[in-house]
Length: 80
Image 1 (spheres, rainbow, N blue to C red):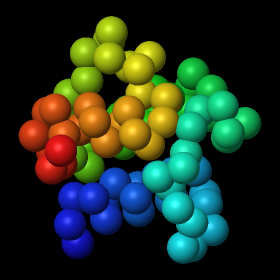
Image 2 (cartoon, rainbow, N blue to C red):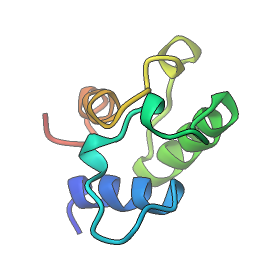
Image 3 (spheres, helix red, strand yellow):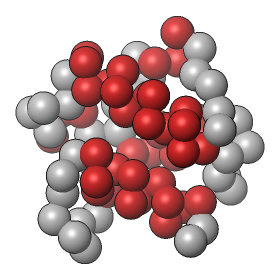
């Protein structure tokens, strides 16, 4: 499984999306249960799954698939 596929799978499982969903369309505004607690839990999951660490000031920027992807790519966990 590529890192891209892994990110998609993590998001599908975390947000309990239907199999085959397109997580690339995800945003915090589109998912009601994506609140501040879910953000912290998601960040913890991403840190564990991709062996990265997010600084406190990065956490509020992770509000969509695109932003998560870009941040993981910047940390070397995904290809840009």
